Image 1 (cartoon, rainbow, N blue to C red):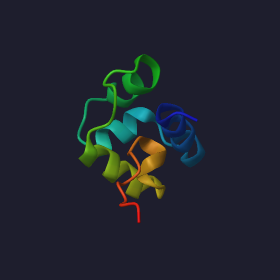
Image 2 (cartoon, helix red, strand yellow; image 1 turned 60 degrees about the vertical axis):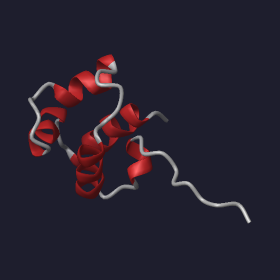
Image 3 (cartoon, rainbow, N blue to C red; image 1 turned 180 degrees about the vertical axis):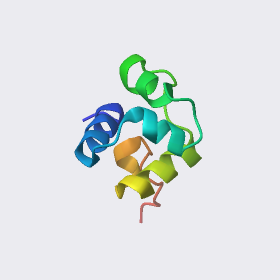
Image 4 (cartoon, rainbow, N blue to C red; image 1 turned 120 degrees about the horizontal axis):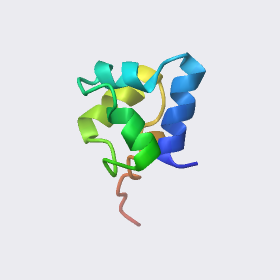
Length: 73
């Protein structure tokens, strides 16, 4: 599933609106709705993603963080 779809489902599962989550991260009420429906912005800012991941109690990668770089031995 895409990070946008994950966010939509996680918010719904908690009974949270995207507008409330937008306010929680200090954005305007339409911010996350536009992210989910229009793809704008293309991705969440790092700080916003981290805050939402902690609030929703999920791995940041579900919200679009990339896998960390690991050296190959």
